[in-house]
Length: 317
Ligand code: CP
Image (cartoon, rainbow, N blue to C red):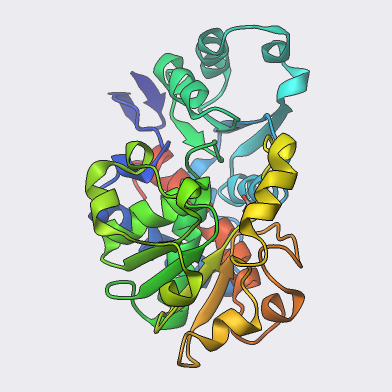
């Protein structure tokens, strides 16, 4: 139970993975984000729907886009953001996550967290009396997926039937959320990954797993697609395996001019959640090409974060 402005004793809703959200809810969040973007473009920067609320962000890992967009989203909705690095909290000295959840939810109206282990986020949500929002875990990045599909909607005018090829690590957290949301919204999701980095049905869910197309050959996977998507080959926490991962993915899984020739049409777009390692998963010329929409995609993190905050915290929105 939690208290949210006009809403008393209502069961809280978390935002941990899009597996928990219906296609209708995901579509609504994207539509709301498009509306919020329009309002901002017309100078309506501050919308005081969340006045009087304060929202905590906890970062176990660094962040540029998520930290900045979420902070601005909170402020532009009239609420107050408070950011903690995990090192500043007793969490780093062994305080249990469940105690953190119980304590912080006595002060804040929502808790948002970027953690190494998704299981910690689930534990935080279990013991928090206020909504918990995933700012990226080792398994999912649902805020990124919302911004991705908002961008696809803007650039292609639709999501249903759009063909998307993700090239790289099929167990990547960004890919997992892209696949889950894509299948729910009717997109055709393909992934090209080395055999040992193929998608994990346990993380995606059997139903989503069954509905994506899995390739080993990226040249086959990108044929006739609308969207080519990639992400870094080595994320934070995977540095020990860096050499091995780079050897596995390069040069075959790099998004470069040669791969893009295989699309066979010229109206495709290139996406990347950023930060990018130019020269590894994507070349400089591709990220700077007219097909690249990566900076619009990054901007849309702001509008989609606002949509999620309003959905979870404002019953009148
Ligand atoms: N895409 C993304 O989550 O970026 P940051 O790691 O900079 O937040």
